[in-house]
Image (cartoon, rainbow, N blue to C red; front, side, top):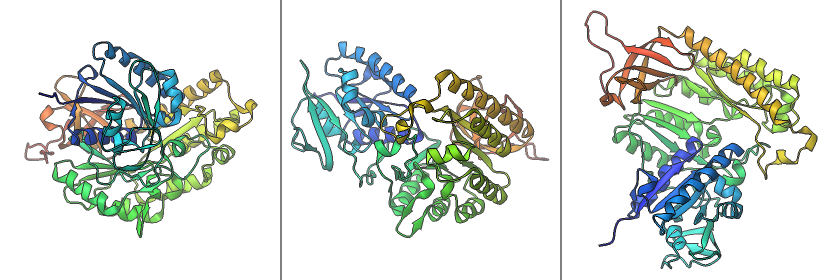
Length: 479
């Protein structure tokens, strides 16, 4: 009797990568694969990758090197690298990791089962298996075989497909608490430091009715929180549907109690969108708004298409409509040519806006992006870049700690996500995306409870469930 093949997907990177990992698992499960919990138990291992920073790619190469050792015990094991790093490196990845059997970019997943069969060296009736051949029913897939000794050919599937948004395919959702819902793939903005448009292609937006049907199914399955995903999610357009209209309709899907979205672009934060955020009870009082820099010359060289002044206007627009808004951001330091004074402008922006959270990075050179063509003398030495990053982190964490200390004593609705580090406690998030640990039971995972924030470490909170005055009963019964 033939054994059911087992696949293991290990994901690195952003929320879109996590969603893509769930998509690959769903595709494989629908084709008869069992999803393994450990790489040691798998016949197929897929390492799903990010290409945003050099450090991430080096980490993945190290991990793939570790996983090749499993081939000694299972000679038929297929080891694949998928995602943005696979798309960016292509054949170079196979040169650096010749033990990899399959390299597949983000637009190739529909044909993943056929590609795995082809990587095993077996012919399939659904694909020719030759250079330039078609895999399965995906018309724009190019598979190139790279000869190597002993085992079958290595395979690359790297064509970008301007029409692929994975409609009609079901993700294998791994969380009973919250669901990632991609509504957009690719990007049209072409910021000079960013590799995404080159590894995910131009912006492609899903049909709104398909999105709403998917979310209705998520709610019917008992999940109450969804996060809409896109590279510049609020630039979404489909026919006469704007992102604001889609957000309003998602917020009104029966059973959905929390809606988030990431990552928006400041230029597309419109009055209409802010009005929807303020008016719809299901939309969380949280906004991630990437600033990237606090200096106009640097922003212009990054091709961000806004100024510090217009960014601050967007912040004011959002905070005026949603006074309790929690605001987070992304910041890059040491972009080529950034002077120390320009870096100080970024610190000033941090102090002016006072973000609740900040994701901070030092510039990472990505081959193929316009910033690599800047004059060699513009590139900032790593030790200076690291010093700027550390100073930025100190400022950002200090502001975050001050904000969170001022919020001790608040009573918040917390959606429980998992067990906390301390036995007998659970961990969850407020609507404003603050992390809270409080005494509780694992049966509470996926349910909402009302919690008083009793203390903070600076980044996270401790809390306790709240009793309704005069009754002795606890608020926050499972929903």
